Image 1 (cartoon, rainbow, N blue to C red):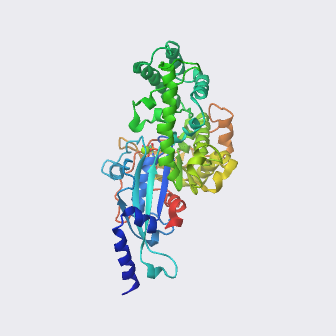
Image 2 (cartoon, rainbow, N blue to C red):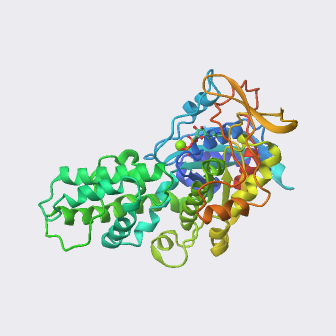
Length: 467
Ligand SMILES: Nc1nc2c(ncn2[C@@H]2O[C@H](COP(=O)(O)OP(=O)(O)O)[C@@H](O)[C@H]2O)c(=O)[nH]1
Ligand SMILES: [Mg+2]
């Protein structure tokens, strides 16, 4: 009996023990978290990553890709988490009449499994290993709720009520609040009216670029839309009688922390090994200094979750467990000529510098890069007033093909970050253009995934060492 038959026999006899046992014994699992604010590009990133891991012809920079003998999708291990709808998203991006997929609004998951040839001298004797990659897609907005865990209802309410008068929809909410008797006996329609006005304010504030718009589920309720844990709102501090509207608001705030925030961190966040945080940095630059500064602040808030310190709620949940690699990726780099990509990476790194310097994420390895999960453009030179400009050509949603010169990012990121932080209302000597290109029609050759920019580098940083 040869050694490979022997190991085969062992493998078979173990199968009867059930997946969880074999897995724990032999099959390493990498849990990759993918997050970022809404529209950062999570869905497109995961779809293209999976397609390019299944067919690795465009993944030269992924070390270990040559050892992958097979890659396949499998049922995910968590029965209660929605599956990431890979097939529909891929069909949207690469089918006839390609278009962007619908945004997802909740957590979802997908398991991709690899059969990998071993390395090293004894490699030939050991047969193939199985490595599972569990990809977990969740809204960055939910990470912002971490800040609620350390607060009680009165202090949260106070903070919110102080800042909303200056924000869109704030006055409407305050008006309604003033007209509501919080001491009155609790009735659901009153709570609902307040929660709806408060949620409308959060959406309006978000739309003009404010980032500290928690509770996160009010913006992205997922399957909890309309439930009592999402039907509360901030009110002035006071000693409200039992059974009153005011008292019930406080109770629901605590329920939100207990039933929504805590389970998310416990069941999803705490189990992540590797994390990619996506950000639409170019979109923010295009929208102007206030949007870039807001992105900086919200990224800093999101990243709090990755340096939990020694005390507090998250530290106690995580124990010794930590995310050991974090990739910050500026998405949609196909909006820039490749000669500008290094500058976009530098800007992304600078944007995250402050958050990173403070604790360096408890020893996690970090990297910043610019990528496009799905490349929608080709590069070309256009002549403009005797100059030749490095432009991009792409397809608009109506099928028209257009060339665009996006503008040049400065070599020194401070030229953008400093005015943004200083409250400038517009960029002084530059204009940045962006266009909503549609995915380009592609004919995928056998063995190749969709076209991308540096997705292979991202994958290499995130999982290359584990293959
Ligand atoms: N040009 C380009 N646009 C992208 C890319 N990824 C995402 N987008 C754009 O960003 C939008 C939001 O992406 P999506 O993945 O749905 O974001 P999510 O909300 O984070 O899941 C898409 O509809 C596209 O318009 C990319 O690689 N290239
Ligand atoms: Mg999505």
